[in-house]
Length: 194
Image (cartoon, rainbow, N blue to C red; front, side, top):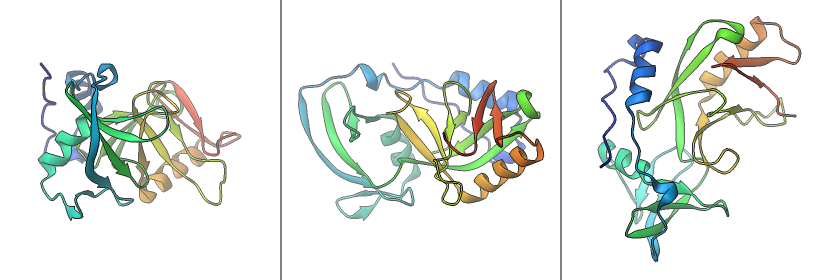
């Protein structure tokens, strides 16, 4: 039985990092990585570049439905995305990344910093060794992303909103590392991937 995530407080900005850690620890997702059903098909769903979800061309406007579908989303080894249950696996088109990081909290400085992101699905993710940040190889055209779940390098990612990216850059530059980088939960993430 999957335990639903506790509800996020109404105002993310008032959430302490300790409270965020409690919510993260209480979150239980379905074990989609261990489900390999034989029945396959197409969901006729897509996640567009702006993070909006559509079914058969119509936008899914109920946040609860999007949250539910997001819990059974998986990225396959070939890079495609599927919605998977023990009974079936259905293809879903993903234009960019399936999630957007829309809010961020920072606590501490330098190596002691911890960054928690709120996704557009209200999920919380703390950047660190299990949830790395990456920014792309071109400083003039950054591609800021946060690993959400699944295999690192081929799992589900969130695009970091531009305003949050600029906050990260400001924090990294204020710490005067060479090359500039941001720390979170004991891991260091250079602003330009090598």
